[in-house]
Length: 285
Ligand SMILES: [Zn+2]
Ligand SMILES: [Zn+2]
Image (cartoon, rainbow, N blue to C red; front, side):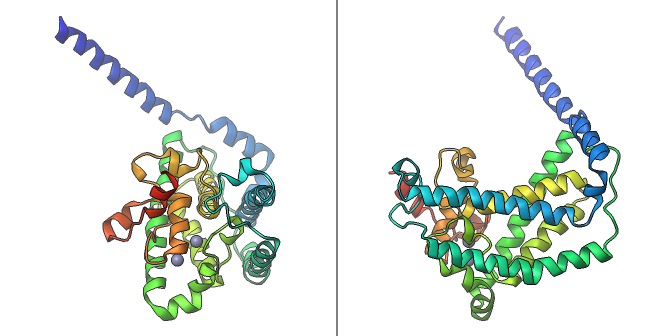
């Protein structure tokens, strides 16, 4: 009797798994992709589309966090979620980070975008959308690869003094990061990061929709890393087993630059013996 009940449960589990897998394989994104294809074909094919998408994603996110930073100086209900509630984000810090970000965008990103617009052929748009599984696994794979690439770049730029002082020290000017500190970095760091975000979806043969969403996702998680908030809905609180380092671990990297070199996941720092949770433990007591 018990064995036949177990068999039924097992059968139901297999059925549920099959349903989930077949849902992931269904062309659920096709209607959305058809809509974009019909209404915004010229915009999407433009080589400037990824540049505009990434710029607007970054500035929208940073604007939202900066409003919170300013309000947090008066409102305890916001300030209590800040990792360093005793260190306000002053206007001086905001202008300093905003000026370098604007300079980098005007001097490096804008000319690169113009070259891209002039020389790069329009992006080919396939008729078919990616399946949900291709879309999700594509974003995950691009993020895992980016995490590894930045981990290597980061550890190298901390271990080699010349690289650190010329290219990475500027990013460590703020030991308590806030959203605008995300792109407070040298042009070399900005170009390296931009290169992997563009190259990874090409290397992994992703659909252009996957590539664009990965680009926006990478900007979101990088900004969240630096936002200076420990919200209950922050990714490091949602993803189990401490797999995601997120804002707390990256904040600790800015305080103790010999630990937590990986930008998003924790596994490389676990394997390399450079992981530190001191701050996480402190904030959760
Ligand atoms: Zn940082
Ligand atoms: Zn660093």
